[in-house]
Amino acid sequence: MELSTMTYEVRDRVAHVRFTRPEGANAVNPAFSSDLRAVMVAIEFDDAVKSVAVTAEGKVFCAGGDLKLFHEAGDRVDSLASDMLVDYHGAIYKMNSIAKPFVAGVRGAAGGAGLSLMSAFDLVVSGESAKYTMAYTRAGVTPDGTSSYFVARHIGLRRMLDLTLTNRVLDATEAEAWGLVNRVVSDDDVDTAATELAQQLADGPAWATGHAKRVVYHGYENSLPAAGEFEGVVIAESMGRHDGQEGIAAFAEKRRPEFTGE
Image (cartoon, rainbow, N blue to C red; front, side, top):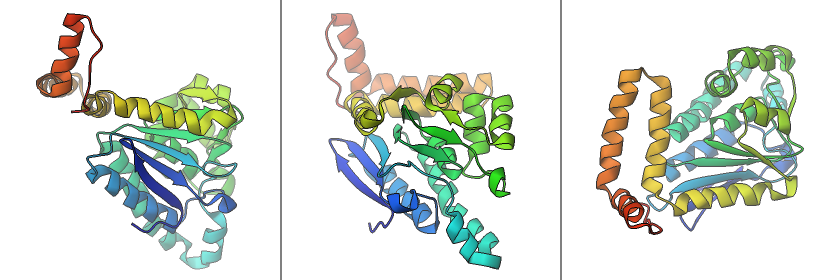
């Protein structure tokens, strides 16, 4: 797999994805979108991967769309954006459907399409000086990157409209209070904290953790009966697997469980 805007490596059951275009603020362009989708396909089909840690080089996690490139596209900008979003949105759809938890470590800023992407991760560790803004209408355009789905669900409709229409900038403390990020750490600790969290998830009952993600999203998006039915199917399967049986036995025997991830 040849990547030009990020790296991909699997260590100890954790897939490490790192954005590597700090000179361009890790902005979203066709190459980034294509790379992201390729990485998601690799993660989906690699049984050795149990969780994912996503970090970025430089001072900015992701500044949003590559507006310089879009400007250079001139009259072709609409078709360029449309083609790019096939990969970008496709990568996010796939990430959401994969039964493995994704942890993002955000340092510096996440704006526009970067904020949209960040909101699609399952868990987010933020640096204490990070800033968050939608920024789309500031450039005279409308939201993309599935922000209308994920950001609105994380923070609520009223706050989503505030961010979208006014381009309000949230600091890390506000982002945590609003439910946009899960926890805040010192800037120097972002990468380590995100990686350690992903490793913790990979070292536990990984099948159950990944499918618990599926259960939560399914329940949030469906009716009460549909949620309950899906929960019943998945928990029954989990109880029949090694880690389910081991976890139940360990509780009954008052000892620490020895999970294998299966």
